[in-house]
Length: 390
View 1 (tube, rainbow, N blue to C red):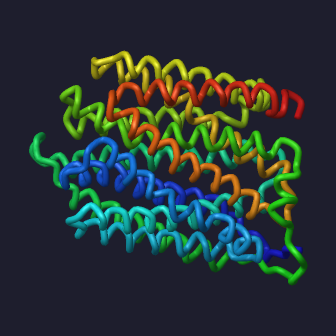
View 2 (view 1 turned 45 degrees about the horizontal axis):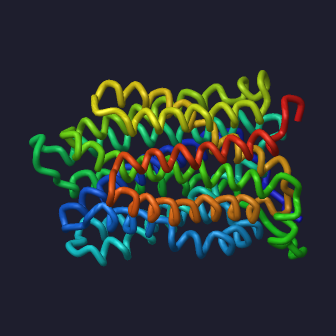
């Protein structure tokens, strides 16, 4: 059984600020890692492999992190996350060989995992059931704000003269964001500590036995993989079409801003249409947008498509967070959230590698791959997601 100290009135604000800072930093680092890999001689396939290493260590560690968090360490996870991402980012600043990228990127992913599990578990434990969509929508709203600010500022810092790509200034900016995330979390950690009385926790089998859990994590993993692959390969699309680093940063920011917009109104959307409907529509629109991007060559057309696609892509993560939190037991929510994140990480490992193989023949083919993934996500959501009155 979990017991908690009295919950301070500002706990949600601290979690939201923490999420925004961490996500902004990570979304600076990841596109910069793509440019750094290209600068060091990586081809499209190797770029996909390096991108996948971000998820490799977390894929192996997520279950243990979830069990650890369920014993009352969500606050510690939110503090350790930015510390570890800070170390990884400083390492990337000085990385001058491709194999070093494959060391620092998994460490970055591990810190990101800790921050996410900690923050999501705090919201799952301390929010009222009827507030899940609203609070998870706000969590991912602030994450999307970070996704928008990070690539935008990072792109301009790296694009010093419009031609040469200098990743170090952008990486130092990310390091500053992680320092701020750790400072915010000191207060979060001291105010929101949970304790465990030593009673047995639920098992992985218990989590998977819950009806609807496996479909929920499939949809979550598919949505995450689409966002991830787009983050990795939009820079390559930009290079192929002659876009500057700053222009690619603008495209990534547009995608994030529209994802942010839908998350701000997710609670009312769920109340009006139901979880199933918004997940199905989100998947279908993302599928159509991915096909459109594959066929487009003009900057403004791609920007418009990313606006629509970003809005649709923004639904999946908070909606599946609420879905998983609502159907899981309070005593093993950390484990349920971590398994969900493991599914996400599995998608982040497998799909970018497949995308890398596709990109070797055609970068635009990657976006057809994403469309197929969203087609299956729509089908699973239609069959399994809770309906309007759930």
